[in-house]
Length: 368
Image (cartoon, rainbow, N blue to C red; front, top):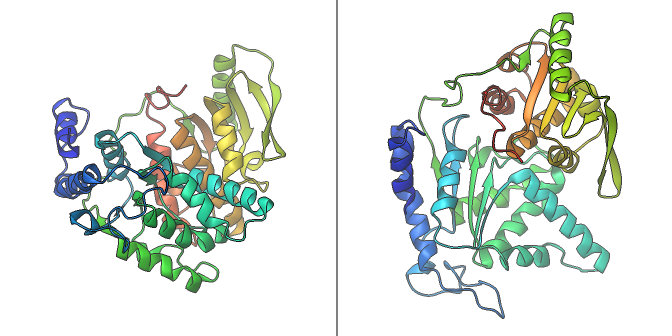
């Protein structure tokens, strides 16, 4: 079944609302998968070098892009379309992963390669990915970490060389990635690589499909006053059955992260406990894997004065969203009003949209 057929089926079933902007790009998505289906099987002795060109292959598969870069405003359906691509892809060796999580895996692989004494650490890690993956789909590409910025170009180039087809979504056009980042001039070749190897499509359209979803029982309380705290206490008591909470210590790459209040897979922490200390994507991934429900108390307004904490909060919410963790929170204001100006406010539009979606009564229903 093609992406277009899956899309129309979802619309007919009432699971999606037809959107002309989404429908306009369906032929490009199916074209990419048609090329993927015609690609030759991987060689057991040399990976997939030569698929779709790269100066190695001949024939029709050598022409055309090696991937797709789908970008546009928050809530336009980019992630949903990526899910349809993965479902429709006519191969088994496919993977959909959040960009943060993938880059954490790559950084771990690079560390292991350095310990082995490899002079070229990026290539063997990328080749290991290519051995098991022909279609690699990244959700929400954004580059904020200089360590990722410095290696992502060589990483993608090697993946392309090995015949991996890459699809990614982003809120930013390629030319705006890592904007104002440290040593950005070293990052510019990666932007050129995107334009050379990927079809860049903007998903236009005025509709934020997340905003229109009905919300269920209240899970977002503002302002974070005594009344909100009492409401959070009542929900905590209901979820835990009044059981006594205990700390949970989670190991992350030889370090430990502690959640002070846990009952089973329900946890509670303050904003400052989660975002006021130097935690990173790996820590938040570990937390998301450890809980099904997370209560966060006292999310403040986010400004230049707490920019580092705000960046961590964005990463935390991205991680909880991907893991479909149920979020209950008290905050200074509604999500859209938490971070309205200053550096980082643009990126926070997506976070606010996700926070709004996570208030849906059905959110987290599929979480394990």
